[in-house]
Structure formats: structure tokens, C-alpha cells
Amino acid sequence: MQPATDEQLVDRIRKEGSLAFTPLYHRYKHRVYAYCYRLLRHPQNAEDAAQETFLKIHRSLHQLDSSASLQAWIFTIARNEAFTILRRMKPSEDLENITDDVWDDETPLERVVARERSEILQHCLGLLRPAYREILILREYEQLSYTEIARVTNLSESAVKSALFKARKSMGKKLETILKGKNNELRAI
Image (tube, one colour):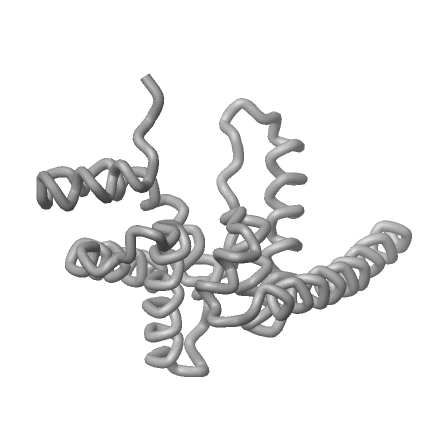
């Protein structure tokens, strides 16, 4: 049996009520948290944003236009919640570094390399302009289409494509600079 589509989940929630919300929550909870985490770069703030996102989804699912993309709608709400938290944050708050989980069956060396790679990517992502970072996260991590990203960010598709091009170019330059520095460190050893 194939998993229910987003449309089927929404129809089921509308017909059966709150108890039918659980499958939708389980489908999106990790992605929403990860998206908020990448935007906010702080685990507790990301958790708060994700929780508020699902509360708003639950309260206003009846307002979702049946022709709209559920995924884009969810990420729009998550974006708004993350930005609300960003506005409340003090500029001096120390943001934690992000490291992606690594597999338990990796060797210690593989874990170190994976962690370092993740830290470098997350660091470079954090150096991007917020608008570029958001679009890159939506496309590369969340795998949203250009149309869905345009809906989430209130930009045209061409503006999304242009910003994504610039974000990738900027990310590449930042990675190149960091990796050159790492190579110079290794040569000095």
C-alpha cells in the first residue's frame, strides 16, 4: 500500500478532525525542524519555531486552498515562525554551530571527516545573506521546486532562479576560500 499523498492527508484531516493530523505531522516534522534549524542556527529556537508551525498548521488547515501546494504552505508558515524568532533574538546571542548527524557504523576517521565537512558547509551557509541562505536551504535541503520556493518567499520564479544562482556562486567562493586555508594549514604541518 502506497503512503497517502499530501492531498489525501488534508482531505482526511478535514473529514476526520484532529486525530488524522498525526500522519501529516510525522511526514513533515523532521523537515520543518531542519529547515528552522538551518535558518536559526540554534536548536531550542528551531524547536520552538517548528512547534509553532505545527500549531498554526493544525489551527488553519481548513484555510488551505485545495489547489495550493501543502508543502509550500507548510514551509511558508515555518519561514514566518523562524523570522518571528529571529526578530526577537538579541543580536549578541551566541548561535551554536550546527553539525549533521553521522552514521553509527562509520569509522572514527570517517566521522571526523563527515563532521568537518558538515561544519564547513554549515559555516559557509551561515555566511550567506539570509535571503540566499533561505533559498538555498529550500532548494538543496528541502528539495522544493522553483514554484514552491516562489510561493514561500513571495518572489517570482525568475527571481528565485537568479537568487539561487547567486547563492550557489557565493557559497562556492566561500568554500574555496576556506578550503584554500585548510590546504595551507596542512602544508605548514
